[in-house]
Length: 343
Ligand SMILES: Nc1ncnc2c1ncn2[C@@H]1O[C@H](COP(=O)(O)OP(=O)(O)OP(=O)(O)O)[C@@H](O)[C@H]1O
Ligand SMILES: [Mg+2]
Image (cartoon, rainbow, N blue to C red; front, side, top):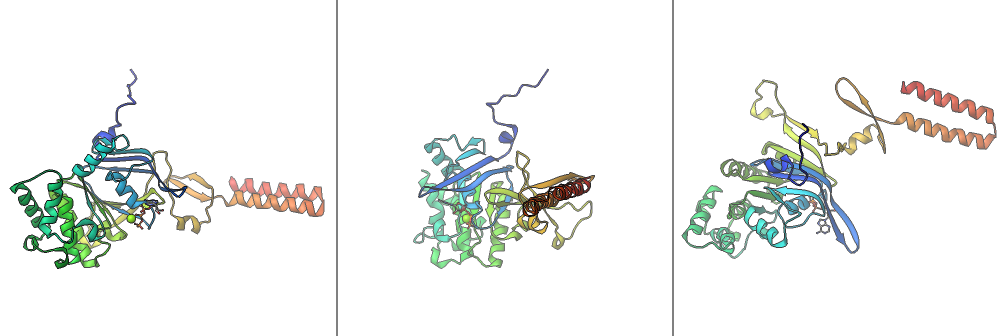
């Protein structure tokens, strides 16, 4: 008997995965103009994953963070987080989702923290705003500050903390209401590389201890060393994915970690080929696919271009000389040449 498939139920990936974005589109309208920030983005994240997101400026990284965090509504497609369809939530439900289930860490310290409050007060604030009170709030804030290594600095104000320490307070603030999802948008953007390293290590430790699904946006491709996998966004779509390469039984030394960049296929089988590869082989507009024993080869359509150029040349020739016989011969030679090459 044929298997019955219900179209109203969420797909299996949506019930077992933590995040599922399917053909996600976000269009901003500014002064009558449309900016397509996400153009059919696909992404699946498993519960408890620690993931990096990289991409050029303007590629849509923050837009994706804002959509996943419930700060912005997608224009089309599907976005499921922790069993919730973000496109279908009412405004009140989306607010509740953002407050209860998501923690944000931003690039600028000022966006994360209140400058005139000390570290402890900053971490207590989201709990107070969520209606919690009493000793438990202070205790939880103290535990979080201890986890981020700031036990000795709880009473320090923002101005009395270094950039790295401020970001660690920001992480504690983001975790105050025990979110299921931690989103960090360039959390190390204003830090030197040594301090950035300590922040990445902090995310790694918290992800392991608290099992909170963590997405970190970065400009720095070396983030691959600190997370389980990195996806690259190009023009509002997932383009590549970097994973630790398998070492076929050999155990690589820690400093010898090998990474492999994989091109992402979307649900319709489309893939993005890096611009530099296309330029290298002069692939433009269309490409020819050839099946080989090893896989699929993407080739330039130079032969087709060659014939088109030749046809144009022949037409010009005919026009110029009005020599019909010669143009037919020229066409035959050129087309014959093409067929031979195609074989
Ligand atoms: N609120 C908005 N209104 C209009 N356009 C926007 C808005 N937010 C983002 N955009 C546009 O959407 C595109 C993606 O922007 P986004 O901020 O997501 O990029 P990004 O990858 O985070 O870049 P960066 O690395 O510079 O932070 C850009 O073209 C940007 O100009
Ligand atoms: Mg951004």
